[in-house]
Image (cartoon, rainbow, N blue to C red; front, top):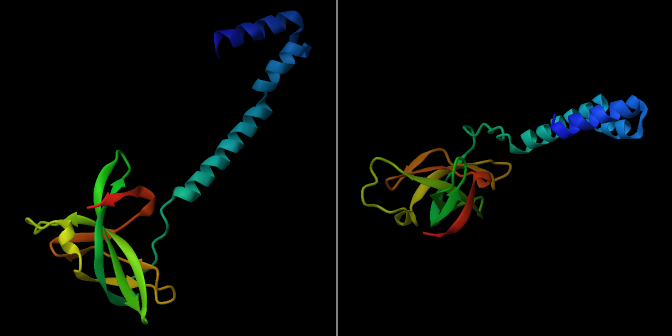
Length: 164
């Protein structure tokens, strides 16, 4: 408790105790009911934040069919976490039943990259799994393409900063 609050409580107690108007005002702020309401509200806020930010349960994609995807463009995004950092991403397209779909994958260097640049991935092909009931949902399991690794992309942790 701050010294002012303590002094106010002592003065209010000396002026007439718990039934004085000043004590009632201070008592309302310090009442056990207010504390309970505050704790419940905090718990509800924490629950909502946890539901919104918890990692989505990964679907079992092992049985999804595969199709060929083509890298259309390469760009950069800012990753977040313990700090912001630029990451390379590749936008790709794939076809299911004559319909075109698109997706995005994070690009990282593998041991065999050498002098190759991420932009060299444009027009490279790789395999992507898609949900047969909802073909716009896809899974990019780590794939080695042109000396780079393609990994799943997470919209919540990254945002666009422009082309490469």
